[in-house]
Image (tube, rainbow, N blue to C red; front, side, top):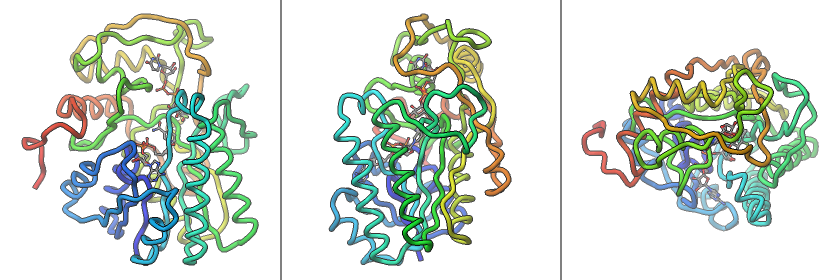
Length: 345
Ligand code: NAD
Ligand code: UFG
């Protein structure tokens, strides 16, 4: 029996593959490599000393997806595959709806056909949209503010309908807050295409000298220092959350949403200071206008995941920044960087 990981070559997927292999699961990874490199899979195998059966396949290609289910006995699916850039989704909504929603529907249809009813799905805190109160808890009404967010919201609803139609399904909807950091080996991490959109990858590239200055998007929010506050979560903690969610879906049925966050919020300026300490580098910045669509404060109420999944985030912003920096320093060109020195054998 194997666990199928869609999008397993990507940032969060590759870290989750390590946790799965270390928990002795057999893995099959399906990824079209549209936003990743097969090098991440090779490095995961290197770190763990275990092998992964990899399919370069697209969720939109029903035959390719079905082939995976024909050739393997799949017990559960951890479904990461999707497009994730908020700004791009505003310009290319149809691409996002087709890739994320149609891809998920094809995956679920194939799962039903092969009698596989266990799924852990990558949702996002973006489904909370703009709320009046923090911390954000799972009972709040969900509403999205951009096409990417709407794909997550719609997929959550589709998966609830699926469970209502057939109670054999067992589904965890994991609402990630702000994943950052990298595996402590420095061998795998986030490898954005082009100029990063997100704060920590941007700061990392300023620290390493690839970019000259960080733009801080607004210092006039109603927060402690005027900059935006987020719940940054170490990707290794997040990855481990998938193991706990998998254990839950394998032992019960139903559909449940869980926040995966630390419950603590840090401002942009606090993150800059922490990164400067971790890297020993100065991060020049400039205050510019607010970014359209940004909210002032977002942080999780993680109590449901703590109570029901027996999961809690353990790593603080010091480790987040140190591990992001180690990955950036040793891999200035992401997975295109030669890793002879770092390779674990
Ligand atoms: P990522 O882009 O690194 O990983 C996604 C992977 O899916 C990539 O390897 C990509 O090649 C693959 N993929 C995309 N479309 C595919 C398709 N049609 N068929 C097969 N493979 C496909 O992103 P990530 O940061 O690892 O995010 C993983 C999941 O978590 C995504 O669903 C994302 O929306 C969600 N999420 C991410 C964040 C974040 O800040 N990183 C926050 C909340 C939710
Ligand atoms: N920020 C800057 N400058 C930058 C980048 C970001 O000041 O160059 C600020 C933002 O304004 C925000 C904070 O840093 O206050 C964090 O921004 P990110 O872009 O890193 O993260 P977001 O919270 O905007 O969005 C992320 C993901 C979304 C996801 C959301 C909730 O990118 O996909 O978290 O999970 F939906």
